[in-house]
Length: 258
Image (cartoon, rainbow, N blue to C red; front, side, top):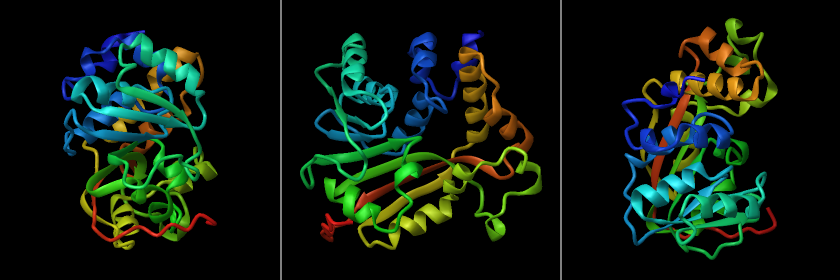
């Protein structure tokens, strides 16, 4: 394993973290790279409370706490909160990162409790529904607060909902949850709850995703199907979508039955 491949010059903060720790806790594209890319477009300060939605094993949460001094509520469904707590204690951030086990539609937080919400490589699993932003996420953020996501995405929406010919050998139904920056911008702004400040494809994001999958696959001694798909595509169709928005003043509806 060549750890140098997980330390890229354009992610100087991420490069200071132990490569073995990153690889042991990865669950997809390198969460430190994605979080650093997102954080450079957001406004963090040590007085802030931040919700990290779908934090996985907490790489993004540890990064935000260490690099920006914020308090983070590290929330995930798939990873046990006690397991994450041990990881946060080992990382020395137990006074700033608080693990929560919760499903994205039943978040146990007060309205307007957070100064910011982030979601790294997770939001496409639960946030594509028409009512999710209003009913479950935006209400948690103070007016004027920021929301940011980085997710696997598309350069442009698929024609007739069909993958291009060169990707059909790799395509799985889950990939239909991927969308373009333009789609995500429209999806959030039509709610009237937020103003999108940035919606773009991460520069070189498909390569970062490919490198991450190769490293993870080698670590697990498994085939790197995603990496093969990305190598075949060369950024023509797939990439990483980054979006940052600011919460408007309009109150969010609270439709708990949905």
